[in-house]
Length: 147
Image (tube, rainbow, N blue to C red):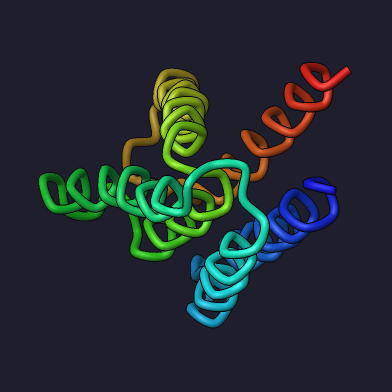
């Protein structure tokens, strides 16, 4: 059931965000707002945690990226922050923090690799492909844990 109502819509949102982020370096607001609305309404009726855990997911994940963007301007785009809010409301605060740690770890390894191999410090790296990679990893780990 969770696969149909949570994983599949989040997967579609992350694919769309990855496509637009790579193509035009923008994650559309209508995508993020529709994702937030969908998961906020869905979690009223279908939740395996208390509702406030999903609201905390928005604050925990997106709040951390927002603070990082305030401390170091240009480190994260607004679309990335809002996209993590969607992930937070879909997964809850615990899983969104785990998601954020994996996201930053994988993106950080990629950035270090780009810097060491190509010596390119000025290129901007779209973050949404890493959202998609972490979600696919998260999805398969959840399937393994359920069986």
